[in-house]
Image (cartoon, rainbow, N blue to C red; front, side):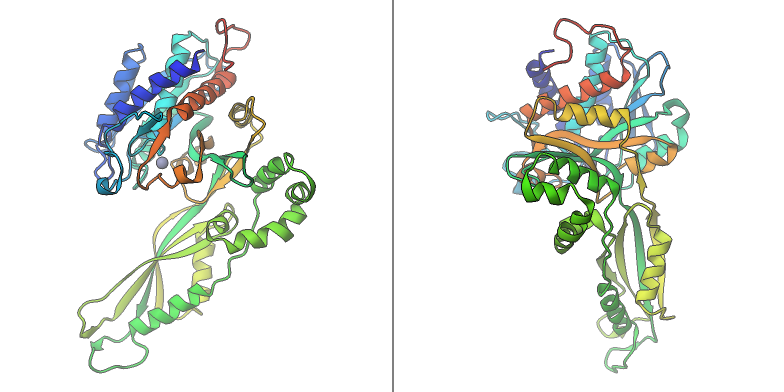
Amino acid sequence: MDWASAGDEAARILSGYLRIPTVNPPGNETLGARYLAGVLAGEGIESEVLEYAPGRGSLVARLPGSGELPPICLLSHIDVVPAEPEKWSRDPFSGEIDGDGYVWGRGALDMKGIGVLETMAMIWIKRLGIPLKRDVILLAVADEEVDNGGIRYLVEEHWDRIGCSHLVNEGGMGIRDAFFPGQTVFGISVAERGALWVRMTAHGEPGHGSLPVPDRAPERLIRAIQKVAQRKAEPEVLPAMYEVLYRVGQTRKGLERAVLTHPRAVRSVLVPRLMKDPLNRTLISDTVQLTGLTGAKSPNVVPSEVSAIYDCRLLPGHTPEAMLAELRALVDHDPDITFEVISELGSNVSSYDDPVFAALAAHLVLGRDDAVAGPVLSPGFTDSILVRPKGVNAYGIAPFSLTKAELRTMHGNDERVSVENLREGLRILFSTVVDVSAVPGVPLGPDKADR
Ligand SMILES: [Zn+2]
């Protein structure tokens, strides 16, 4: 394989994909699905576009295998979050490939870039005529960013045709200098925190704003918010966290190695530090974030009800019901404070003792002594959280090495992906899928899948 030219081809296809405006809302993902369908059709790969609502299409394409193993799915989402063009240095929908080797545009990282690599991995398997022991299915779905409507529709209405045992999606990524300078850590997401979105409402006697009376709904709500803010988060380190720290620790020496490779030292030395940092805390605890306040009517009217909205995120094993009970206890079971669940989603985990996980981890770091791959928890959820209950082992990884500055462009300004990352990422994805899906012993061609 000539990964350089294969990566350049992927960059050109991505450039066209980024020019298609699939900003959600409204999404218009059918346009993106048709674009990918056209690329596949050019290679003789059939696909279908399934809409759960007008314009909200998801693409399903399949390379058939012998059926010796259940299918593997390569999943991406077609929709992107909005961009503020005036804050970008380039047009967010230009798909421009600049002189420094970057492809620009909203979705370059999250996650049209990955969607194109998954499409190209399918295409290369087809071009090389690789015999498969399982179906390889490409899913590019609508509406991940707002309501997960595309994957919900496929899981609820079309799962009989998909029925995969494994799925590769977004979730984790390779972060340069993640723990130590000069080292890239590829965190493959094996679990995602669940969510409880809840409205906390304070009730009280309504009245005139000119006649202050204590204990009306707004004051009651403020007191309840203060009580919730006193919540003390309990750290809990998942096995996946110990595992990735262990793998990083094995590349270090001395004290660093001693701490990272021993769970007891992780708990006593590292966890207190992680809990002090708002971002790291999300990896080892449930979080409760106030996201809004509602209820004002008019400046001179004391309303009978005012509400606070909370976004609670839950570690695996922690249920939305338990979090709701914790919130009620925090406000001392005040009968004038009520809770209403807006939405709930339980957390779930995939085993990392798995051949697909092992193949991904191996190819991510192949030939590199400056990189480590291991399992991680995603602080927020992706479409994977909706497929794991179907018995699917879902792994999340953007197969890119990103600087912390590049990471901030996801959902931010100046989102772009380097052509180098596309070349490497294609090699990683293609090699992984071939490893776990190809009939063994059949030669691929003169230089096989080595880089
Ligand atoms: Zn995404």
